[in-house]
Image 1 (cartoon, rainbow, N blue to C red):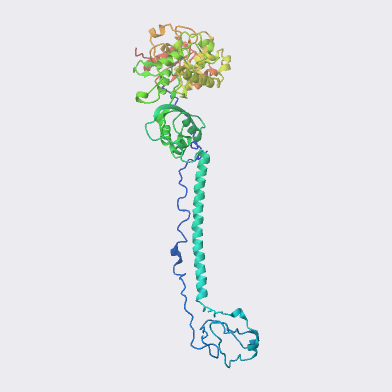
Image 2: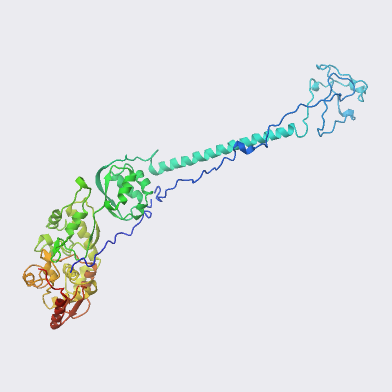
Length: 541
């Protein structure tokens, strides 16, 4: 059966730090694009001159009104001013003993004559002259609501103007402080006194491969970009990364990115799916080498072809790939350590009859990421080493003890199960293998016949089955010399724990994959007739 019947799919990595972010991020890891204040934090200037209106008009100072009569009885060259409606009581001079009237002898005003005034007591003429009042001018007391009120209003206006300028000055100080914090914060994070270094827009230099590791933050990716020569500074990349929502869905893996480009362009290339390189999916039952279908002539790409395609970087004249031939050559090396062959398989791999097939089955089915800038040997070692680890997690080292199989033989048996049955029947086919091996009965699996042929199909001919090869289980007893495909973990677990039963025979009887199991050879022949009637066993050769 075609091994495309159960595509493994790309489980990928459920990792979104940038969902953090991943990028998650040390200077800004939120990466939201805020502009700071959405409005002027100080609003409309509450101290604008128009705010005063007419409430504080400059007061008009009026000349005091002097009456025609002197306040004092007696004659004087200068009439005493009269204050109308001033609101203050007139001074009472009846208690003369408490008041000393100054004498203006030396004054420019001369000596006023008081005549027969009420202050005519002669004792005032005999008192010493108090010179403190020489040349004193009369003080005009402003009427209520005039000068005093004007002074108060003037003072209030000055205070209001001082408040206005104080508020404006305070606002300016706040803005300066905020600007300083931004500058200082930028210096503290990016380590520079100005905008981060960045390349000018342009085509950039040759592509390089950049790895995004599981759990990487935006800051760590930025540092990788600098190390690879993609951007001029980590800050240039980081600033662009936190503003690109595509970073939230970044997956671990390898990406082909141009060198010497602006941070914005680097982020755009990184989130572009076409930049992903070194990624492939190996479906269950896939073989190392290409083969074609007898019925359709369609070429089924082998693992080496998948690796070659995933290794390509660049485009056009700069496109570079690891060739199928280079991988095939590297995989045939006798230096098994350089290929990562595990110790539990090394002795059997060293004795395989065809070096080109020695890594068959040792690269597990699944979703893979590898560094395409590495050489073919390094890539194969990475895949084989990681596959061995996943196989060992199932208990392959010891699970075969119960059925008398070595770890490598367990891998071979699992590859047969993968090619011969649907997942629901894995454990039953595993039991058939174990039961036949126990009685030294040839397995007689068509899948082992097809493995050595350039063209394959579900059915085989008598001539095909008659060909003696290290893998043909019609012509040779026991297991084939190597695995015939990359098994799934489910197939490996099935041979580690076969379903109890006494089945010796099985055959698939229709295109839906219905498989019948039996211990009886006669019943098995009847099941074969049913398969022939459905046309599933008809060969196209």
